[in-house]
Length: 397
Image (tube, rainbow, N blue to C red):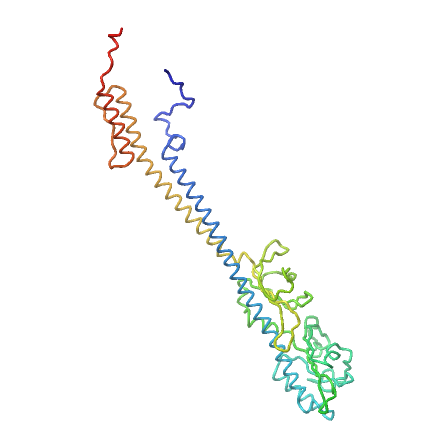
């Protein structure tokens, strides 16, 4: 019975390329399987490790930024409360509670308070009718302030508001200077006379630059190298302070918080430019009797910087994985080559036996492995076939 010839053309010894064809070469097949498996494992390990490290870094960086935002907000509230207490202390002194106190005496007292707290840009006493009677540096003496929000509000309780631009005050403090960017926080407390009725209001404008100093004490200037930025928003979303550390030219809008009532937290914040930031935030809730102004303090860093270690880890794993894959391919190529040589030796010996060489012996590799046992079995089979008598076809004819 004749078998149909194979459709594949025979491979000869001169066709050297077959050694790289996994369909024909044992070495090529072993190297291909090993390489593909090692690369798949490398990519899987890099992706899994990168994802886990990225999530860990996002949680860690977000928690750190949340803590910084909370510390900054808490420190701002404490400073404002301290200035309120200083103003209340001044309002409780006897010279402030007597109508007979002269302008000069009130001014001297208020300038002493200002010397002890240089954040006060201006302090002035307005009588019950709303006219200033005594102020630091004599600024606005005799000026009516009855329609100012700080005067109307502080007639009943302590008042805090702002910040707001006061060009007139800036002009008085810095003649000829720029009055467009200077902002001040309003503080005011009621002043009761010694007999109990309202005597007037003690108001102050706090220089807004102190906020920058507080911010630098929590998030120093060195953080700009890591593009860590701090932004303080008012309760209505207005930008009150921005450190510019995150690299933008204009501060972004307040982050869209998942829960507007949430006091503090973290999130991965997308921006209009298509990038994202790791963000921590905290709301100002005041300190002790000071209830705060509802400011939102946000600390951000671009995600590509905050999560850079995860990307570096992935690159390192891919690099080492590529080296390991190359080494495994070489080892599998060499190991499979040994088996290929034994099989080639067996094939050549079998061809000699088939050609009538009675002295040809099938080779046997050393050891007691599966290949050695297979060679023994094939060799014994060939020997039995040799010893078996052949039928005499001439008699039958």
